[in-house]
Image (cartoon, rainbow, N blue to C red):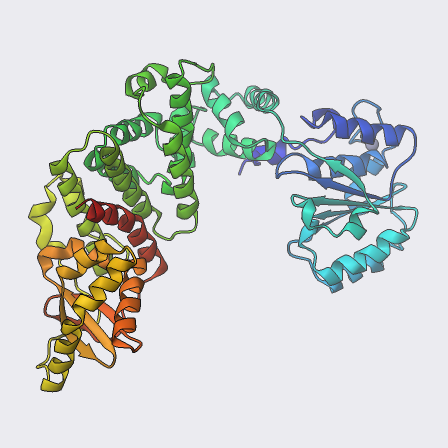
Length: 535
Ligand SMILES: [Zn+2]
């Protein structure tokens, strides 16, 4: 098997560590002046060269043929055997007091080949408090032949007592043109064909980490040349054409096309969680176009010009997609969140601009069906055919008939229970005026469509005909439900629980919703509520 590129091209001298000139200059100077410190801390984002620099430094301070420009010769006896005198510890998996004590037991031994023995502790922020304390004692009075190099991506998690005993070096994110230069060097050495814009893309997308950039290069090159097509395939990204088409349809408020596109992308196995980032990057380009600015690194500019409308509020869309990105990160059904978002987005834009009632009704029905489907399938849309084939939602209504858990057919109601129900009904005018006083008139409208069906164990069951799924969903929103609950409890002078059900259905056990469904209901809920107020 071929050696991974990033290992093969790992820097082994000072002059091939890229983008960290300041750090390297200071270290070189210390070697030259023979002012080597006994403890260093290297901080910075992943893949910026902290560990590589530590290893080169460990060889440099022992090298017999040390070169002021290059650093270690990598050929002398000391360089070739440096692995004996360099001890690397990964604190992520060795973070206990015992691990540090074992380390301390070895530091009294002299180095085997050179003048110094170097301990490199990677991810040092992962050490336990006890381990930090044990390390602190060693750092306070280290033997003269010992050099500690602590490396971390999270310097804010290092105790100040440790920090104050180390020389601090900050590794900056490497700028993309330096990364590109390095990638091109590697590609030419390896004789791998490449497209210039594809190398640009990799250099820009690795957030200043050289190692990540080389890793992506490695993966893409195993599919042949370095091209945008191969990058999309390897990284699970959608193509720029698909992203543009999605944005275009969002601008045009065409939720059906959007959903179809998303399903198409899912079937191509693209990574859905990466979509928001891709859309945002493209929307930022669109923002430039809207302001008549074209950046040099933009691609497919003509297409972007075609889809960018001068009136669209692009920055607002960017903000909402960033929020979506966060939610999707922690969701186990990110594709559903994305679809919910797109539908909501398309509807929102309609409400704001060219209001079209028939379109809106269609979309509300789609929302209802989606919510019902979610309930039926516990968060997984199993039947996607209505979206895929573009069949109008009305025709597929029977497949989304809600099936709530633990439903039992309505039992014969006792006279006693009926009397209680009648009593609650007689108090409805009081409940309504309480709601009205507190400016919840929209809830009165929703309640008006429902019927009190059962009154069991201080639980009131309000039911809605199946044709009123819209009202039912709106009233079921947790904020609305708690308002109703408080109003009923206050007027009836007892703690009541309200359940909202469909006609002829009674839930005997409280419905359990998982967090995800609740989130989606909140997403839809807002929209539905707005329409009710307008009614
Ligand atoms: Zn050497």
